Image 1 (cartoon, rainbow, N blue to C red):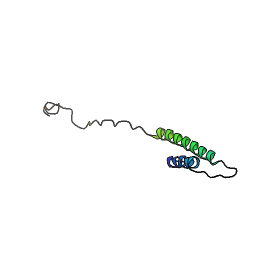
Image 2: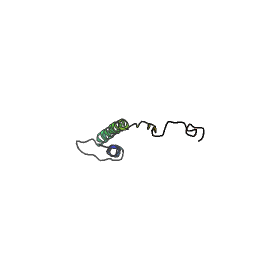
Image 3: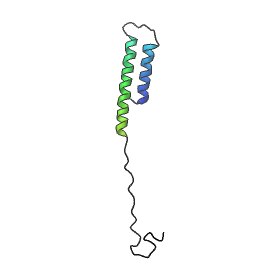
Image 4: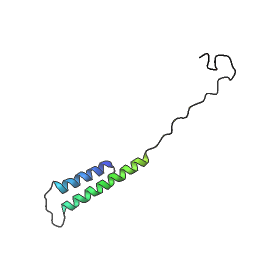
Length: 82
């Protein structure tokens, strides 16, 4: 169940608990709505903890060292002529 499903459960539970006055024999709709909201909140908490663990930390890129230039001193490549 994704985040959207959890939010739908919370909304449906709130509607059943606070916005309806139906009476069904053998079913307490207020209790069913509260159960939906609790299950939705547990789902949101679980989803957010799993999503936090799934984030990948990318280490910074290592600098590339260019070893192809010659090592001899010509007076310009040692930093004084640039």
